[in-house]
Image 1 (cartoon, rainbow, N blue to C red):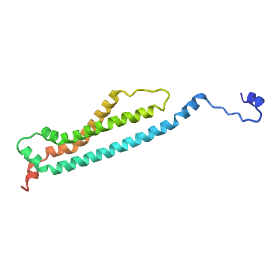
Image 2: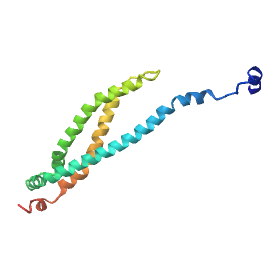
Image 3: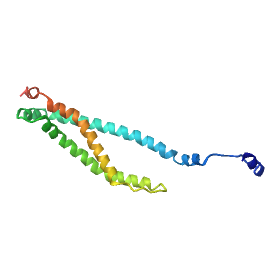
Image 4: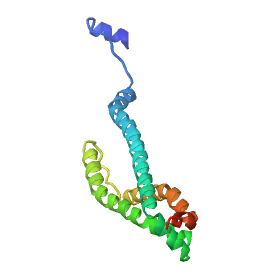
Length: 159
């Protein structure tokens, strides 16, 4: 092919490449953006878990005496964990309600730049909400279970 090209166009260089390589180059930018978004998502989840863990520590420290009194009156560990986690779960659900329309809008705008449009299904958001809730509960469980299992005598000793 190169010889035939040189016979027809002697002054031009023969430039060859495979068709699939040309198509793959079109998607290089999307793959770089995907890698960047993966790292940004992981870091943001880590930071939010640390913040949630800090909030759980703060809440349990503020309510230490209340937890001790409830344990003296016969509250189980499950009841105390439920009491401490309910407030945090409502904050997680509020965050999910706020971020879902924003995420849907952003993904739809991003998908408009492609030739083949794909509709975003509702179950994607349900799965992400369940993931948010499970990660939040996992993060909260460390501190709330520890607070629920603590000896009430230590928290009420100063009273």
